[in-house]
Length: 257
Image (cartoon, rainbow, N blue to C red; front, side):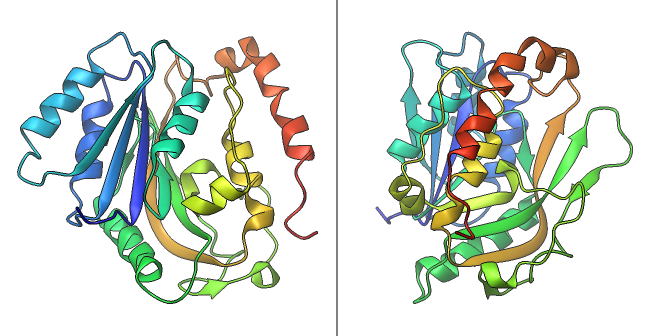
């Protein structure tokens, strides 16, 4: 079997209402050297049944490379991501949440761009793309792009990065790291902690040397639900978890050091 160029890691827990949309968007791409790792975080609903159904019906002819990692009890999204990273064999890793989805055309562009570095001579540490806030009920979809801060469609270094304006920030949904870079920096997201996206983005940065910005609206971040971790009332209840994140980030060296 061909060694995968990219590992796509999807933690699964209580997303039976949304997971089919996520799966269809991931499997619609046409390349074969992609590895999908689904981490069953002891989900009590029908999410895993839906995954099996989608694989055995809609996409059975494509035979995507799929790994299932199962937890014996619910350990949280952070540990699920750690488990997926441990199982990844692709040269680059994409994290996707099972209630979100990706744009098919942009996904193809992302994969083709990464394959240039997998099979070429140059090394790329981090690919950056745009993401879209798919807020429930909102007519206008906010797009997070980096046109003013980063060179487009070329390899660049920290010396080429311009100033980020207010409200322009990078999240887990906009970065794709080289797998070995994440392992070399010892990335391990803390257990029982939400709001670790900033740790995932920031901790590996001192190890990043070469970057590439692809100006496409790739990831669709579905927000606005009452049970979501970024819901205001939920965030208030979990303020203790939010307070765990800044000290971890402050302990990391700056990429400019």
